[in-house]
Image (cartoon, rainbow, N blue to C red; front, side, top):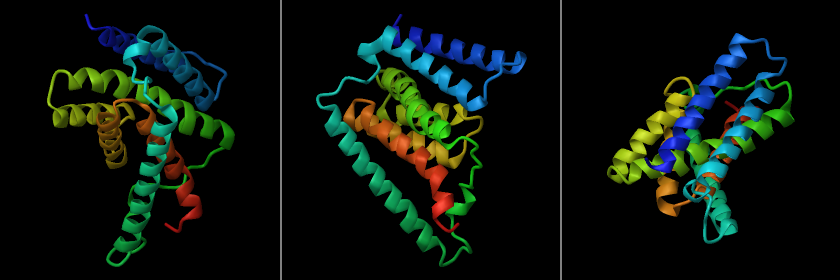
Length: 202
């Protein structure tokens, strides 16, 4: 059996057990702190059991991070310009239809969990393991779509934002062949979804 499939199954079982244990037992941790712990454990398991096939190896990690930063800036500018253009025919713009202000009680923990640790765990799992495994078994378009649907579905329901993110991250992984650029764009996207409604008029 392909090592990636074994690790994918282990992480899925861990995720189910963690979620069930949190709801079944009264665990005295905030959901954010619990999620942070779960994602850190998943990162450690993936790196320990499938380091060489997790997508973390790159010729130059700083270069990949720079590419990811450039792509994130370009996407951010495109979103803002697209929203500004949509205001000509849609009152309040299109952006307010897909994102809203999130009330956060602990901004640092939210940032650490939602914008740093969770995106890294998700990129290792969905792109490093799952997408790379799918890509060896189906054409690129099919692998991008399937992995993106699974990524969006993991968030509870298939929202346009999560689906678009999955398509972008998988496309970046296909281009760069490592998780670093997709991770930077994913982290920046999560940060933007959180902070943009507070600084940009929706």
